[in-house]
Image 1 (cartoon, rainbow, N blue to C red):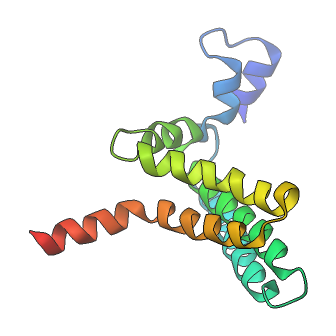
Image 2 (image 1 turned 180 degrees about the vertical axis):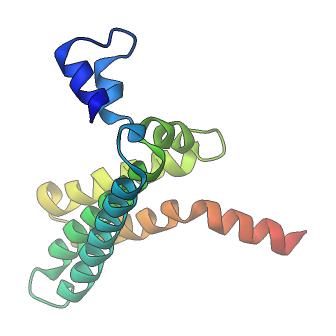
Length: 148
């Protein structure tokens, strides 16, 4: 908190404004863990709610929206543990680059399919691709372990 006050008052010239406010080290460990749990639980809740709404009229649209919001919330939760800059650096490492691009594209394309194109089947496909992209590292490690 003192770090934030120094930056906002202009007393700290050595750090960039945007990075200091977003830096996870400006939060205490317990605060970071609490917000991680809140965001992750919110993401899981949105995904479960989306799945429950799947069987209602216009439920496919609600599923696409809530599933996407759940994935965004779960992804944002890890920013509290490692910080947003480190999170982005890890997401765009060469081994994760394709999965990251596919995941981000599918997040956007799911919402486009639901709101603008009106293609519910396409939204479901993009949700499945979101899941596969987010679990890509685990799938690759499982296959390499089984094959070696």
